[in-house]
Length: 116
Length: 117
Image (tube, rainbow over all chains, first blue to last red; front, side, top):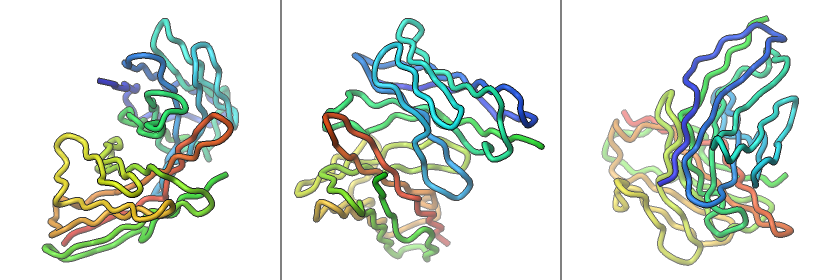
């Protein structure tokens, strides 16, 4: 079956530091890949996504590139802010555009704390 | 973007009672919605797929008689936790899939924190 493995946290950084959160996946076919962010007490918000190999998703300074050869989708940001403190989830969906799209398999989540 | 609303955002109930959680797509129709459960400091686990007009599809290990799902309209799915017990305390999140221009995207509700005492 499908699975997603995320770098274990928590991750603690100083403001303006560089962020990398590793994510690798196991899936058949060509899944779509996502990063979601969850702020305390809230639901999930889509941060970025990529639907095919070599696609780069980006949003709010965050980037991730769909690497099929290494089955990875690592999240990066060049300069983090205190407001980026949250839990980040890597996820995959089996088929882009199919009726099962949205049926997500999540990684375990990585808690990011950014200090001033 | 599209909005999915969950209600209530939190609920406390006594053991043995039932609790209903609603998931609404506010500005789009969703034939399929998904229910997830999140344990403290853990990831989200898919519980079931809610299908409008038909029975829900449950993931392995999820008790369908305990977690009743009804998807009576294209904008509303409900999850009822029957005869709740403290071990059912958790954060429940729904999502709905919006299809557009040959693409699709999942939108999540804000979640419901259930505490069974």
